[in-house]
Length: 253
Image (tube, rainbow, N blue to C red; front, side, top):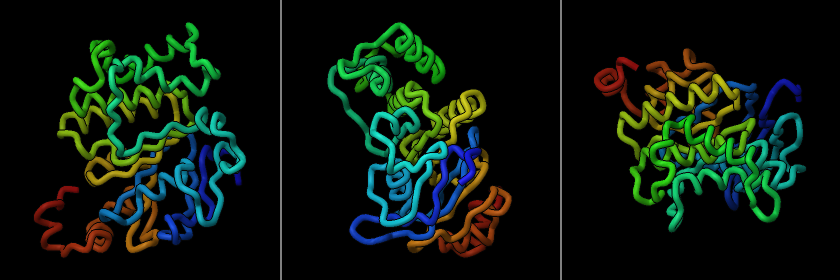
């Protein structure tokens, strides 16, 4: 496996008790965004949870920065990889700043005390998602879109080389979807993490993708660059829709 790739999967097989999707392969360099698209229940989240180590893989290897991810300690993995899943956290009596600060725990040692450098990283992350005016607000009292930006700031705080996001815009209105993805694009351009993200919004996925994997019926249906994937014939087959409906609703994709 070439060391130029930040994260790679080699013949990965994922699932719970039994394999759900097999023969998953990809390579991502720094600053690249890979999107996963496909019908509900096709296994996009399962792939992401396996790549980040939340689920045990059935076969294959995930390489992180040239190293077998299975050989990494939890702290080592947390310094390389930040994860934002679909679970909606509801921390009691925590401000937005305190939620973001938890992203520094891989660096703070067993007592969790923040140094001045840690505090500076927290402030920078909060500013990068434009949440400085809400930093001292209770996390449970802000909107879904604002919470999602706080959780992205928490991930940024880890200073990861890899960012894994599972449907990060699913519960947001169109304004907050675009705002979130604009922040993500800027982060990728400046900080250069490799980003793996599952999405339902095809028009937005097309705009941010460098590489896309289509998942359907327990297999990788197709993979490639946006020009190869976001085409009428591919999308119709992937989601099982006829071309008339596609042309009526998605002809501008």
